[in-house]
Structures are given as structure tokens and as C-alpha cells.
Length: 104
Image 1 (cartoon, rainbow, N blue to C red):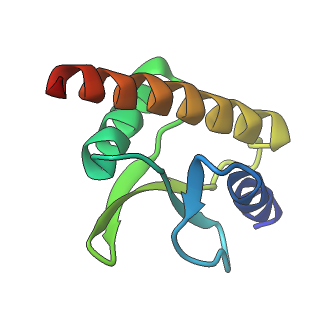
Image 2 (cartoon, rainbow, N blue to C red):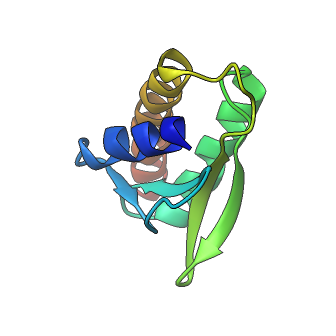
């Protein structure tokens, strides 16, 4: 639960990310802020899984697609959370740019 709270703090510290619900246990639901956010966040989740960095799922909160990270492995620490946040930001920037160029 402490690592989930750490993830929430890292999300709240970055304007590109949005924490969608308060963290009370081990689950953190968040999203990358951009146009076409549902498409971009779905792609981020796939890229995180395929890269092996993290294995989040997705869920819908208030009609918005969210990346859902459930911290269940006792070996997950701040370094893994930091890697998840860095990758989310990188994948999000790349996905949102790709979508913008496709729409132009």
C-alpha cells in the first residue's frame, strides 16, 4: 500500500498525468492527459505490457479509460514505480504525437 501511495505521489507531481481516484489500498488508476486520451491510454497500457516494464490493466472511471496498476508483488519498490512513470510519460508523448500527425 505504501508503494501504491508513492505511485500516486509521482503521478500527482507530473502535469501530464492525472490520478483518477484516491488511493486507499494497492490499486492506482490514472491516465496520461492529452487529446484522444482513451485511445492513447489504451495504447500506453499495451506498450507497458509488451515492454515488460509493468503489467497494468485498464478500466473505465467516469466514462474515461484509465490505466490500472495493482501493486501486488512484495518486491515492487520505488525503482519499479519510477520506471513505470518514466515509461508512461515516454509512451504517452509518442502515442499522442502519432495521433496528432495521423489527424493532420
